[in-house]
Length: 277
Image (tube, rainbow, N blue to C red; front, side, top):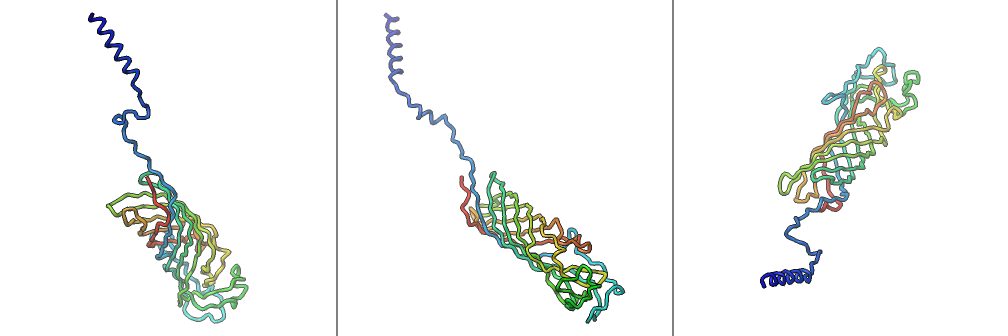
């Protein structure tokens, strides 16, 4: 009968479904969307060299000016001849060698750690080297130091500041063409003064003298740079860099408002492995 035939057909379909083995590992490939692997990044290290000009500033674009020496207060040092002038500070060459470790945190942003040696220099005009011939009564806090100069501004003297620097920065990067990438860095660093021959100025005596006890050993600076990366996956970067010391290297009141400043060209080579996806 018709009812018997329908029952038989239904039973057959159930048996066929039960006999069919379904492999859960296969799944429905058409229904599974492709999953994009997240960007992974390991630390990438690089070596960079910085060269440019450094100097002292009391503010943005403001060169320091020393107080005028009062000739009436200048002691009669042996050999103190020539016209007296207030010394002037000018910019001089600067150099840096950095080791950097960078890690990409987002597609366009990351952090960088650095360890560096930095040489900042300024130049000033000096006069005759009078050394220990300065009378002890006139030397005051300068006694016991080896070098004294009359402030006649007749010769050039380079003030050296040697720093060991450790810092951290954040960066943003963006590809501007198929073979060029632009990176902007902004960071801060602690700088330890290793050595210096910097001169201090005494306006009342009209002399310049050395005394490293009047220099701050620990200092802080801010830096920023723009780097242009060359290549599809850049291994070489080049661009300008600016650095400004928030603290002053001097403790004396005459020099207290002076801050080291540098504008330079930075070249960096990536030596570690590349980021991967």
